Image (cartoon, helix red, strand yellow):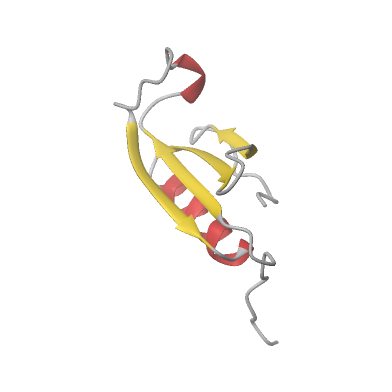
Length: 85
């Protein structure tokens, strides 16, 4: 099987990992943000999102240009989704 990354045609994905439920944030609080990464492929985005979930972080995925929430928030205490982006 050939493992090729799924390109996003110039789209960038932002993966945010939080220490607590992002829905519990007030305003623009960012103190609970553990990490934030930008990726150019869906493959890398999915791998990093799963990496953070396995380490107990809440995960959200945003469009890098529009800042639109594409996926999440995902609770680390729940089963990881089969499809993220």
